[in-house]
Length: 412
Ligand SMILES: [Zn+2]
Image (cartoon, rainbow, N blue to C red):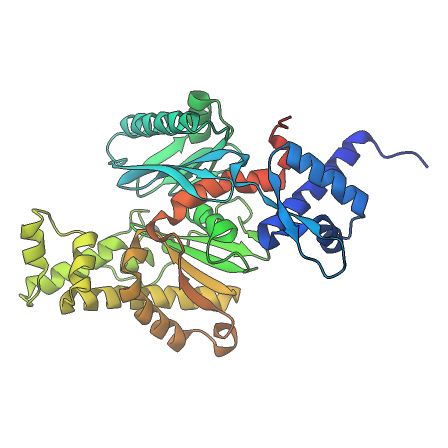
């Protein structure tokens, strides 16, 4: 029998390296013997794989377990000090940059207001300057940079790092991957904000143990990260998950959605819809502390002011949020009926009002989802709240390393 070609062997080795990292990510600390049991690989193969991952600084030894079988075994876990990752989120009205370590701990962060719908070049330059600051911060901490992840609203060609169309930004065909790679020299990954948020919840958040879940990224728009059977579901052309633009109810008098169509789900449950609901209530002169808060803060009506009012017990604010929660719940019930997920995670700016939205969401879902599928589905707020997609941007890089560990160089 001929020996398999060496490219096949290195392919298999890469899969095994990835398998070890996955187990250590989910169940660490583990010993070499435990890894051999879990992976069904023999002990000497596991030892050699572990050695390589230690050389790449991706895992490290963390002491020994007091085993009853006699000899204590050395335990392993992912190495937080493997290096750091830059996460970038292009929001609709802000840009944010973080530095995280290999297990998702935030080491440095910066967030600035921006208006990407006004001037694309200015926003990109503003973001690149923030990325430069992140690189300086990593240098000052003497950390190697493992890559850059970027999340953006809209449809993305992830292979090309190309933003195809973001209705809420009015951006089309922007080669974000190329721009950020050329500026930094770092391997750059670009994905849709909701997909990134789903990956962040899978790697570091509330969905670590969930095999099938849907991450709802809600703010100015509503996007969906469909994480099904252990991986992100992207659809035939990579654009799956545009749940906010499912037609919800079409009435001719409605203001159209930013996508140009009418009756989209997100127009009933996004931040703008909450502002509209509050405005309508204030117009009929309902008693509320909102006008007072606006005067105090010298601010127009904003989502943050509404949340503040709700926290102070304002009835108009809490009722407007509950109405939006009800509309959010109707769409979530549809998703539960279609996908039968273990979990629904709500993240993004809207989750700042999570405690006011969630009871209405749950009530609405209970009425509409089938009991059989509802029994499986927990509805939770994101571990990272408004930062769900920012953490997810960093997670894009970590996921790529877990899938292809040899992309990270050895350090001797
Ligand atoms: Zn739409």
